[in-house]
Structures are given as C-alpha cells and as structure tokens.
Length: 124
Image 1 (spheres, one colour):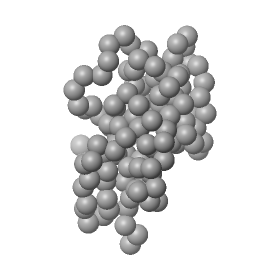
Image 2: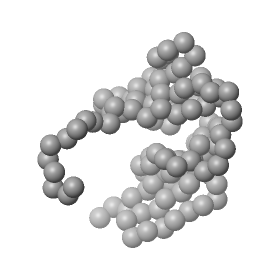
Image 3: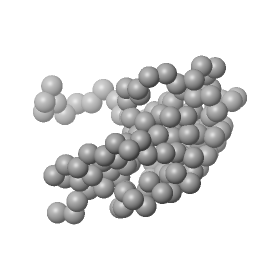
Image 4: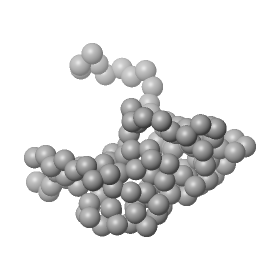
C-alpha cells in the first residue's frame, strides 16, 4: 500500500546459496569494503561498514542453475573501472549494458555466476 508509514520489519541481510562460501565472501568483502566472519560452521558473512544489510553465504551442494531472480545493484563512480576490478577478483561482465536517463547499468556475475549490476548514476 502506497503511503503506509508503519513497517513490518527492516532488511537485515541477504543470503546467497553457493558452493564455496569463503570464495564468495572474500570476493564480496572486497567489492563492498566489508569484513568476513563465520556465522555458522561452513557459512560466511560479510558485514559492511555503516550498518547496512549483511550478506550471508550458505553452503549448498548443487551449482547455480538458471537466471538469478534477485540481484544486488552496486552504485559505483566509474563502471569501466568497476568492470576491470571485478574481473581481477574473479567476477565477469556479461556484456549486457543498459543506458537510461539516470545512468548506466552493467550486468556482472560473481565467481559462481550469480548476477548483480554495477550502476553509475549521472550527476544531476
């Protein structure tokens, strides 16, 4: 409902199923400038400075299949620099780019092919 002020809750975190929680936690800790901890045996968590939502990486035996239905948007200052740095960390650019009035969006993947976007907003 639009205009509702009372909230049911707040976004505390996002959990990602993956085969190698340590590898993904290391990747995302560099991308987001966070700290890696073990939340449960075999699980890893990335906590980002500023108290935002945490990313938790849950081990599962099966590889990712199909397109990710939920993805993160990461605001960056320069999409080209972000593509290069993410590539050095083990991620990759899918080649998909969208240019909108408010900025550019490039579709990336992390080392286990989970999609996310880097977004460079135009300065107004």
